[in-house]
Length: 268
Image 1 (cartoon, one colour):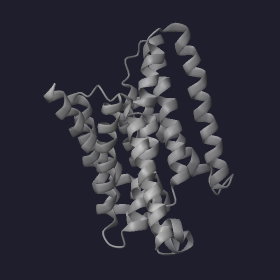
Image 2: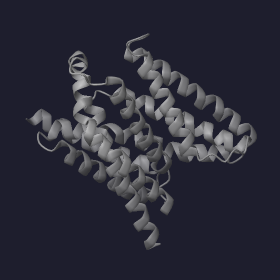
Image 3: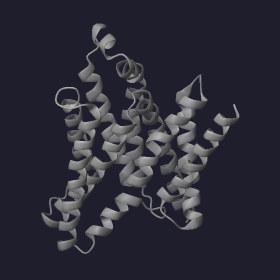
């Protein structure tokens, strides 16, 4: 029992580090709406993966299907934005596509598999009672890839978001930076969702970065990491005490964190 608890909280801490590495760049690059696209795309890809395994017996790992779906739809947002539609319209279109994939394949899964819907629901809400060494390994592997590259490109992403013409004039390859950002975001989101669920991932993608931007003038990345770890560990503790999925505990803690930030701002 103790070994299982240690594994659960090690996975939660690794997930917090992964969240901390991506949340701040999302906020600095004005990618909050993009995060919405990511979570919908990952969910659609996860449901598609369940269908492919349950019906066609392909044996493709669900995180792989979720990652590829999120990556493809993210690239679609990048290609449509500014060329065909505004960014908001492109995101709305891709979210509608991802939602359609989710609804259609959820219905198809229910028709052919009695356990398929349960697998899909675990991807939505996560499970506070289950953690494996594979979960921890996936988190750490993604962290090793995502964190260094995110630190490397954060300044350029911020510059591109606030002064696109200036970035182009300086010779920055905007498309390469965006595609790298999308790929890293898709990887991190798909791994997080496979362990803590889509709902918790959706909450965590925005809150630590927002706290870091509002409260830390120096070393915002440090606060992003610390707040993300605090939210995941505290959220898992609350979820186990209340016997609810981790998304519930993380949501409760995140709501208090945001309220505290608002109160502090009003008092300032």
